[in-house]
Image 1 (tube, rainbow, N blue to C red):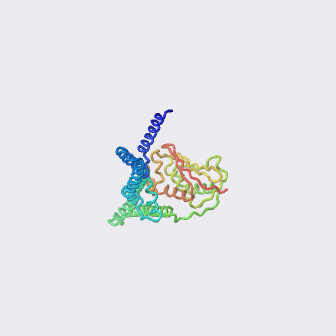
Image 2 (cartoon, rainbow, N blue to C red; image 1 turned 90 degrees about the vertical axis):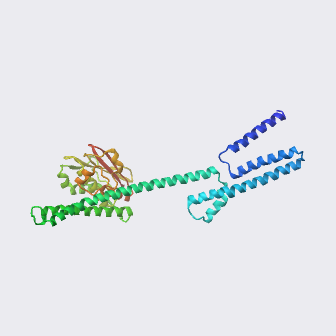
Image 3 (cartoon, helix red, strand yellow; image 1 turned 30 degrees about the horizontal axis):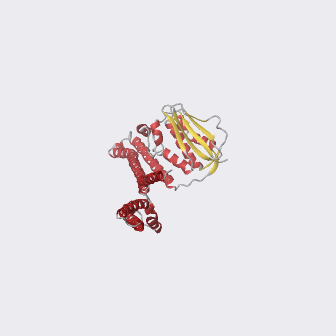
Length: 368
C-alpha cells in the first residue's frame, strides 16, 4: 500500500472517529472540552504554518493552545453549566447537603453527562408523578369514604329523629303506634351501634392494635359451630348448610380462632342475605401445601357482576345500595374480613357470577 493511500485511509478513519465522538449522545465535559481544544489547536497550528514558523514553534503553539483551551473550556463547563445542574439536583432531593452529598457534587456530578443528568431528572419526574397519582387516588378514596360514611350515619339517625319527634308531637299517647315507633327507633339505634363498633374494629385492625393469638384447631369444627349459630336465620329462607363431600376429614389450622369465627360468620351471613330461597351454602376445605389451607364459602345466590369484584372488600362499597340497605348490615363486614385475614399474613379472594352465585376463599396457616 502506498504512503498516499495509507494517509488517505488514516485521515478518513480519523475524521470518522472525531465526527462519531462529536455526534455521540454521551459526551462528557472532558471529551467536549478536549474536542473543542483540539479544533482550536488545529486552527492555531495552521495559522503558524502559513507564516513559515519553525516546527518547534508550531509544536509549542499546538500544545499550549490545546492545554489552555482545554482547561479554560472545562472550567467554564464545570463552574457555570454544572452550577445550574447542581441547583437541579438540590431541587430534586430537597435536602441540605451532607458531607457525602458535597463529595458527590464536587467529584461525581461534574463527571456526569447531560444525558445521565436528564435520566436522573426523568426518573425523579416519574417518581413525583407516581406520588401525585397516589395522592389523587387517596384523596378520591377519602372523599368517597366520607360520603359513604355520612350516608350510613344519616339513615339511622334521621329515622330515630323522625320517630322521636313524632312521639313527642302526640303519638306517645297513642297505644297503637307508640310501641311500634319505639321498637323501630331501637332497631335504628342498634344499627348505629353496630356501625360504630365495626368502625372501631376496622380502625384497630388497620392500625395494628388488634393482636392475633394463634392456636391450633380443626377448621371443620369451627365451620359447623358457625353453621349452628346461623341455622335459624338460614331456615327463614330455606337455605341448607353443608360441608363439601371429600372435605370432611379434620384439617388443623394455626390461627386466631375467634377472629376466624368472625370471618366465617360474616361470609356465611352474606351467603344467607344474598342467597336464593331454598338454596345452599357450601364450605370447602383444601390442603394447598405443607404451609397453607384454603377455606371456601360458596352460595348459589344473586352473585356479583364482574366490574364490582375488585372493590367488594372496600369499606362501605355496595354493589346494589338500595337492596343492601334493605337487607341490612353496615357495609364494613367484608372490609373487616379482609383485614383479619391479612393480619394473619394470608390472602382472600372472590369468584362470582350474576344469578350463579359467589365463592369467597381465604387461606390460613396449616397447623399440622
